[in-house]
View 1 (tube, rainbow, N blue to C red):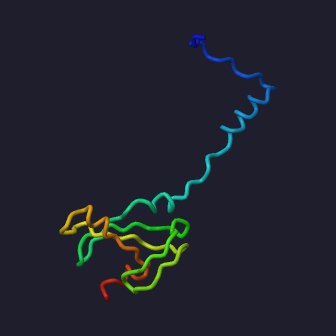
View 2 (cartoon, one colour):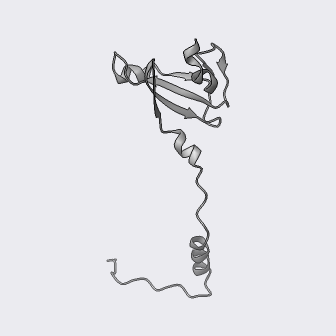
View 3 (cartoon, rainbow, N blue to C red):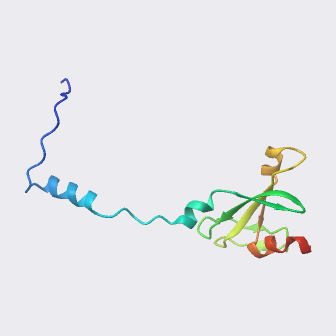
Length: 114
């Protein structure tokens, strides 16, 4: 059957479809968690040891054990931490991303002391 270009009739004011449609659009949109949204975007950091991309991993997204290169301790699942890779690697960006490391937040902040 061919489609019609005529607009559909609005449902009767007492019908269930009309009430549900109005209720659906009348509610406020859900609050967005900006920290969760920002967590997937790597930030650039500059330091005496080079240019770095640093990405936050939330506790909910940390699913495996990782070893922190700063303190050589295990980062257990469910622990918020950082994923870090060097932007100005001599071997290229792909090699740097493959060589990324998971750091404790504190260990990354004090890494220049090691």
